[in-house]
Length: 147
Image 1 (cartoon, rainbow, N blue to C red):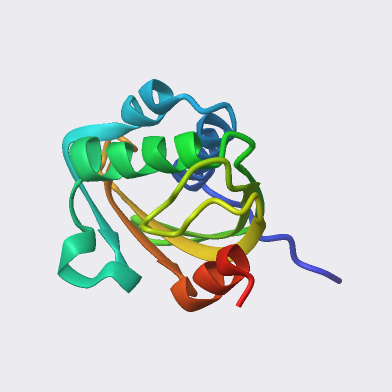
Image 2: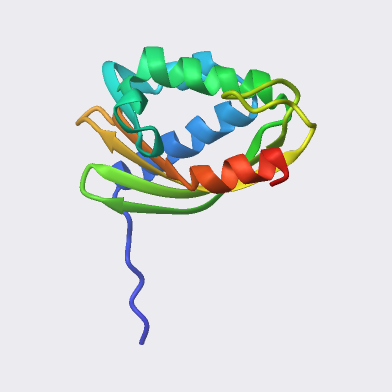
């Protein structure tokens, strides 16, 4: 007999918030992304080191808006969502076609497709308090430079 593991309402709510985040990213709506987090939420973009650490509402939203501008067809596919306590880990493919210079990379109209890992942390009200993002930055650069 197979046992079915039930997810708690909290886990489902937090997964839903993550999916809403990625839906807003697809729809190029940073205002929707902003409403999912606490006022003091933070972000860490691991490949960028200390320069990638800051406020979700400043550094995070500005970075995501910048990528939306550079890649107007930016899109994503959420592959998995896994909960562990107050964290949800999302494995996501993000892809798009470059339309403007981006992070010093000249626009050649090339596409990127990059696996990302987002780890969202939540408070007791199921609002995002921190997002950690990791990806293979070297692969991202190679795809856009054609090198």
